[in-house]
Each structure stands twice: as structure tokens, then as C-alpha cells.
Length: 445
Ligand SMILES: Nc1nc2c(ncn2[C@@H]2O[C@H](COP(=O)(O)OP(=O)(O)OP(=O)(O)O)[C@@H](O)[C@H]2O)c(=O)[nH]1
Ligand SMILES: [Mg+2]
Image (tube, rainbow, N blue to C red; front, side):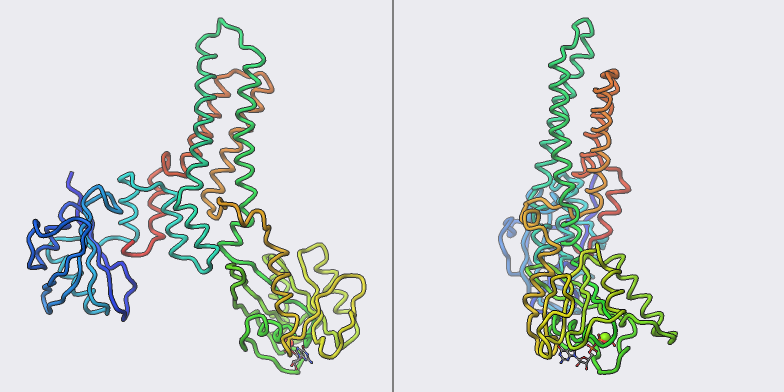
């Protein structure tokens, strides 16, 4: 069946040097030729061609490249037109292509076609989304590794191992007259255990993967006037939060981020913790406490210019057992620790001293160096869920073997695990999942 030819502007709408309009489908070349003064024979695949582009209301000069099927991103005939940047030109060219028979592409439709035509697996397309949406270098790296097939290779190795175990189990089931030897059962078991270990190893990267995707959430807590907002500004290196000598200046939580070693660090400045009768302040303090639920690390800020008081002690006990750093601020006034039981990091938010050391401590207390350097990080909830479900099925198969259950049952669980692993690459994914993934793409990709 003839595929309709889709078109979209692939570059962001705005003023710039060039804009790229793309087409994909059987009629891509014919449609584009209607705008040009060229014939099909003039267009060599994979060469840039300078051409006139006639639209209803203006003429333009641009470049076009033809990628003939199947040697294109989507696997179909594709054309990329580079026209001059600017909203009017790109829109005019697109409109003319639609007039000549193209259909406006849906979000992510180019990549969806690439997947449906077998050019790319599902998790690789998710790597592309991650790279496009990346806000940090670590996200780009993780997305690239997905796109580069690191997870794909691992999934295929695990699936192949399950397939060969299944084949051997089938043989054992088909020849029941031969007693199955103990060593054969042990072999099945060992092979399943190995795959189980590989899944567990991948799941161990989930925590770091989430941090790469969402950044490190850092809550800045402490009583009023200790310098939380000043610390936030010093870490961000600009005056984001209001700072005054009045206790209770910050009312609401305030968020902003910086990058450190390619990771996004999300700071949350909070209202100073104290007993208050002020309605607005009380609401702010409630919000400050709530940050304890989602912070990856808490900076408990103390004022080095004063003695530790009851509120400081409360704050310390509230956060004990959580991932925290005790920060003693105002070291320009006093550089001796006021809290003797635990190690403190001394800073002066005012003079911006001790800030680099604090930045490195925040990073190191959340990031596992061994994991962050591994080539596969599970950053995607869908992959995590699939791995967990595959793991459950493998565990079920292993329990059945231990309980000397029928090998048919064992085979069913292994088959299910194999299928679930295939959902990651898209080999066994349902239509709904596929549609949900591609709507996350932007137009023109
Ligand atoms: N000497 C000195 N003063 C500081 C330092 N950091 C902050 N201050 C001062 O301490 C006062 C309070 O600072 P803020 O940053 O507003 O304190 P906060 O903890 O955010 O206070 P609330 O918002 O009221 O909870 C201001 O007058 C700051 O200039 C520091 O390192 N040294
Ligand atoms: Mg403040």
C-alpha cells in the first residue's frame, strides 16, 4: 500500500540562518520537484542540490538532499530542504508542499515510521527523545548510549540465553522416556541465574539513571537568618533569592538549578524553620518540611556566628539518618565548628568561600562513580518496569525448578520473561505503548 507522504518543519520556529523542512513517503521527490525547476534525473541521492523553490506568494533559493528508500532515517524516500531561516519562509515552503499533496506530519511521525520500517528499535527512539530533551551533558550521554544500542545488545544477549535454555527444556519435555539428569537441571538453573544477575545489575543503575534524567534535588533547610538564601545565590552564582537581615524573609520554596560535572543540580531554598503564628509563613514552613520527602540530599544550614540553639538541634535530629550535609555558614565571622558531634562543611555565603568544596561534596554524596561511568544506565521508567517484570518471571521459573515442578511450567515463565524483554526493544510491544512513546516527540522528528 502506498504510504502518504508527510512533511514538517524540523527546526525550531524562529529567526535563524536556516530552517529545515522534511518530507518522507513515496511521493516525496515528485512533490518537491513541483516547487523546483529540476527534473527527477537531476537529483542524485545523497547530494546537495541548489534549487529555486517556488511557493504561492514568494520564491526562495535553498538546498535539497534526496535520501532514496531504504537508505534514509525513516526507510522511505525522504527529502530535506534547507531554506533560509525565519518563520515566514519555512512556513511558506511547508504550505506549498502541503498544497502539492503532502500531509502535515504528526509529532514524532518520522521516527515512528523509522521504527515501523525496522530502521530503529523502540528503546533507541527513546534515546533520541532523551537526547533532544536533555538539559545536561550526562543526559545526552545516557541518551546516546541508548541510541547507540548498548541496552539493545544486552537485551539480545539475555534473550538469546533464554532461547537456548528454552530449546534444551523443550528437548527434555519431548523425550520424557529419558530421565532428566540432575546435571541438566543444574545447567538450566545456572543459565537462568546468569540472566537474573544481568537484570539485577541493570536495575542497580536505576537510581543513578533517575538522577541523570531529573537532576539531584537539594533542599536547603535551617532556621531563619542562617543564610540559606545567600547560600542558594552563592551556589547559583547570581542573586536569585531575596536576602535581608530580617528573620523570615523567604516565605515560599524557591527553585533553580546549576550544572556540575554535567549533572543538573536542583536547589530548593526554603522558609526558615521556626514556630510561627503567621499564616503565610506557616504554609511556607510546611512546604519546607515537604521537601524532605523528595530531596536526594539536604543541606542543614547553621549560623556559625551564633551558638547552636534548640531549633538547630531539632533540625539536626529531623534530618538525621537522611542523606545530608551540615553546612556551617558565616565562617568569615567564626571558623570554629559550633556543632561538635558531626563533621560540618564551613562556608561563607557572603564572601563565597568554601562553595566549590560544598559543590563537590553535594555531587559525591549522591553520585556513585562506578555506576555513572557504566555504558548502560536505566533512565527510563518503561525499561525499569520491563526489567522488573522479566526478573519476577525468571524468579518464578527458578522456584519452579527448585520445587521440582513440571518443566512445561518453567518453560512458560521463561517464555514470558523473553517476551517482556522484547518489549524494551519494541519486538513484542503493543500498539498502545508505541503510540504513547511517539507522542512524546516534537513535530518534525
Ligand atoms: N557575615 C555573614 N553574613 C551572612 C552570610 N550569609 C548570609 N549572611 C547574612 O545573614 C542575613 C540572612 O541571610 P539570608 O540569606 O536571607 O538568610 P535565610 O536563612 O535565607 O533567612 P530566611 O529567609 O529568613 O529564613 C543577611 O543579612 C545576610 O547578608 C555570611 O556568610 N557571612
Ligand atoms: Mg531566605
